[in-house]
Each structure stands twice: as C-alpha cells, then as structure tokens.
Image (cartoon, rainbow, N blue to C red; front, side, top):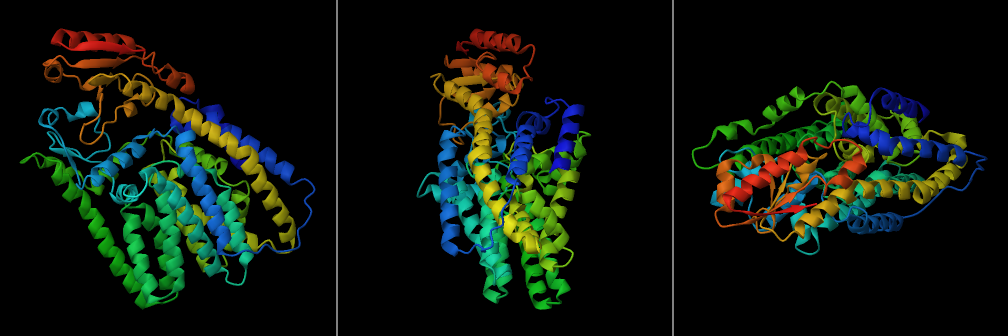
Length: 551
C-alpha cells in the first residue's frame, strides 16, 4: 500500500491534474483517499488482539449484505449521483434502454435530422452519413436487461439488483471452493461489502455491475462440474459477452477454462470450446447487422467500418503516450475505492496462486485484463475505482481469501484487523467517497436540469466550452423531449435555416451557466467560448429564431 502511494505521489509530481481525467482523479480524489486509507490501516493495526473463534454464517448473511448494498446503491442513484447519467457510457445505456423498451433495435430519425444527426451528438453510435436511425454501438444486453427490469420497476434498479446478485454468487463460489470453511465465505462478503467501487458503480447505468454478477454466477456454475451447470454457464457466458464490450468476459473465463486442459477433461473442454466459438461468432456478427439498420438505403460504406477489428485499430492508434502513467493511476484508483485489506490479502493470494491451480486461474484473469487494457485502452475515462477491472473484483476477493487461508497461526489477529478496517471503511472512507462522487456529478446534473427548464424548442451547447460539455448534449431516441439539445459546432447554415423556418425558440447555453463545472475541475474553459456563442446566436436570429441565453 505504501509503495502504491509512493507511485501515486510520483505521478502527481510529474503530471498536473489537467493532463487527463485519470490524473485529475488521482490529484482530486484518489491521493486523499489513499493517504486517509493508509492512516486508517496504521491505526487499525495498533494493538491487535487475536479473535480465536472463527466466523460462521449461512447464505442469509449474503442476502442481508447484498440487500443492504443494493438499497444504498438504489438510494445513492438519486441522492448521491442526482439521478443523472454523467458519462457518455451511462447515457448510451439509458438511450438504448429507451430504444428497446419501445420494441425496436434502432430508433428511426425524422427526415430533417438524417443529414444533420451529428448536431444531436452521435458519439459512441453506429456510424452513418446520412443515417436513417440511431442506436449506440455497444453490445445490447446491458440495455436489454435494464429495459426488462423497467417493465416492473425503474431501470435504475438494475445496478442495485446486480450488486445483490453478485453478493449471493460470491457466497456460492466461496462455499464451492472451501466447502469445509464457512469463515472464508464471510471474509469474502466483508471484502465485497467494503468496496465503494461496488456500491457506487451500482448506482450508475454502467454495464460493470452486471459483468461482476454474471462472472461470479458463471464461476459458481463452472465449479459444480455437472452437465446442466455447464450448459447454464454457457448461457450466462452468452449474456456476459453481449453486455457491453465482447472482450470483458472472455478475459475472465479463458484462464479458468484452461484448467480443463490441465486436468485433461477433454469432454468439458470441447463443450466450452464449441459453445464459446458460437458465442463469439454471434457477437462479432451483431454490429455488422445492426449497422445496416441505421443506414439510409444504398449507403453501405459505413457497414464495413463497424466491426471490432476497425475499432481495435482505432483504439491502438489513439494512444496518448501515457500508457503506464494512466495504468498506475487506474490501479491507485482501484486501491482507493476498495476494501482497505483487499490489496494486502490479494498480494498473499498471488503467492498462494503458485500452489493452487484455481487461484492461478483467477490471478491469470487479472493479469490478462491488465495487460490487455494497458495495450489497447489504458485510459478509462469516467468511473469509480478501475472500471475495466470491475468484472474481476470477484477474482480479487477470492484470491484475497486464498491469501487469508495462507495466514495460518496469525488468523486470529487478522480477524480483528478485518473487523476494524471494515468498520473504518464504512464510517470514514465511504462517506468521503460518496462526497467525492456527489461533487463530481452535481455540477453537470444541475446544468442539465436548468437546460430542461428553459422551455425552448432547442438548446445549443458548445462541445468544448468546459470539460465534457459535449456530454450535456443527450436526446431521447424519438426526439420527443424539449428542448432538443444540439452541439454548437453542428449548426451549419442549412440546419439553421431549417430550425428557424418556423420561428423556433432556441436557448444558448452560455459558459457562465457551466461555471460550476469549470470550478470543480479547475481547468478546461474554452477561451473564446462566449464569442462563439454570440456568433451562433446572431446567425440564429438572422434566420428567424427567437434566441434566449441561459446564464
């Protein structure tokens, strides 16, 4: 922990907080959390009296802890995150949820927008120019799951439900791995409950809570070693691959499936090989098919550019020369948003991985994910903890429990230490983490609410006026909400003429309205934003629009 803190301090010395969002997080949130956590850990280690009695509990503890975490995540979506989707990833999950809830795979665009869709903000959507419809270019099952939940309750309940399912599946995995020890399952649940990354990510629309829950369900089924369980695991694997991005679940499952080859269990290995080959082919075909739904007849060039090979090459070409700095910042953020004892026990678990094949497979999933993301996408952008390692939190916890098992005679003292650090995390660190999360979401959420209250037909926002201001331009799939939000850079003369032909009302979102966002980041205001806004307003007035200014 001290070494990780030293690396974080070095990064802060060499890079300022405005280098990118990962370094901003490190300066503003993660370094204070690491310093506080290390101090708490030192205090908790003071005069540790051993607890000789082992912990014991049954599945009802998993249900209790999982339900408690789910309730916190559910309440936190409104109270902590202001009920707002801040990042484009969250917005696309909610956008696709609305598309699927209407019974379609892509939402049709009205005719006037087919040639001007970029003004509506089509970032992270299937490419088309012109386009007939729009939908995100993520795989669909996270949004489909949210739409399914939305048939009964609000779609925002999906993340909390996945958090609950993750707790139950983690308990089941621990009981399968250590059938003679109930204490190991209790330790696993305490590490899970002490993860602010689990709790706060469960408040969002990200696919990550479902990745974690489905990975743990898959592992529980795999460990049962029954034919019906293997078939069910393949069904779970199909869903897990199709949640968000196709590589996340395979990086978790591949090292575990390699155990079948080591055990020479050729029948099960063949079943999983055939099953995952079919799963992979289906989800690799999916974007090519969906891309045809958003095209105008005859515009097929973009269909060939929608596959994952093109996306991979684009990701590799987008490297910013800060791969290791970003990854160290990601790992520091992961440590800062998880249980105080997770990293120390995880290190012990890595040592145990040399002696246990399953522990080695769990460690292999972590290493494979870290190496892969370092190469293709070291910059994670928005997220709590390290988002791309979220689906592997189960691996981390189970490896930490392997480390717990290796403690031996000192287990009694570690029971006391685990109890202390869990309480310290819940009473001191978690409120601080929730405060950081609220402070990050609140300025943009307040600005978005003000735009909604403008009462105009359209609202125009400069895509670079303040950090991530383009993310304020999010519209419902059917464009049935008002005001329709537009990127200022997309206001070409033809679109301006069409908007103002009927005397539409337009609200210009001025940089002064977004000042709380700049104040939070401390950087990023576009110097000529006011002038660009005045120029756009003048063009709209000349074309016949009634223009107001939101300040």
